[in-house]
Structures are given as C-alpha cells and as structure tokens.
Image (cartoon, rainbow, N blue to C red):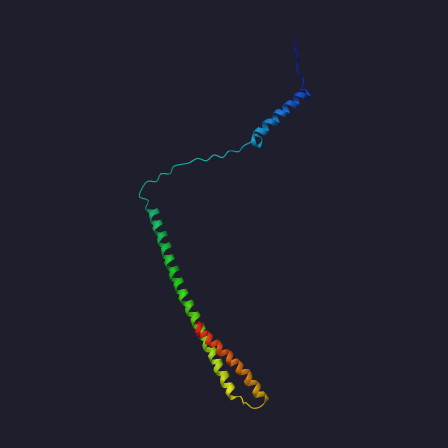
Length: 142
C-alpha cells in the first residue's frame, strides 16, 4: 500500500515556521550580510624621479619664503601698532594740556566781579583741577 501525501498538515506547517524563526534568530540580520573586501597593491617606481624631486623642492621653497614674509609682516605690524599707540597717547596728553592751558587763560580773563563771572570762575576752577589730576596720572602711567 502506497500513501501519497497531498498537503502539509497544520502541525507540520507550524514546525517548519518555528525552525525558520530559530534560524533567523541565530544569524544576525536574518542571514543577510554584506561583505566588503579590500585588497592591497604594490606600486613600483623606477628611475631618477626628477620631476617629483623638483616639485618637492619648489613646494618647500614656496612654504619657507611664505613663512619668512609672514614673519616680517608680523614684525612690521607689531612695530607700527606700538608706535601708533604711543603717538596716540602722546597726542592725547598734548591735547589735554592745551585744553587745560586754554581753560587757565579763560579763567584769568573772566572778570572776578559779578554773579556771572564768579560762577564761570568756580566751574573752570573745578575743571582745571580735574584736568591737572588726569594729566599727572597719565604721565605716571605712560
């Protein structure tokens, strides 16, 4: 007697499904993996290689000369900057002294009589004292 199998039973289908799920759990990414392969090669160069040597010398010369020029420009910039700051301070002190002398001259020419003259003289007196203090503090800090 020969038995022909017509279809799968529900139990067989379930068993096959369980086995398939176990295989997927064991293998990462469901058994699908992308492999990259990288090889290596050997490069052989023969000859005197004059062009690469000349190229290296040119690049080295350009780099050194650019560094030299940059250093010199930096030195000039620092020198000019410090001189500008010093001359600016000197000019500021001279202007302050000129204004103080002008105020003293105005103080001496304003009449001391009358209400207006007295108020101008007292205002100028305070300003002249303030400017003298600033001038002396600038001279000591410079």
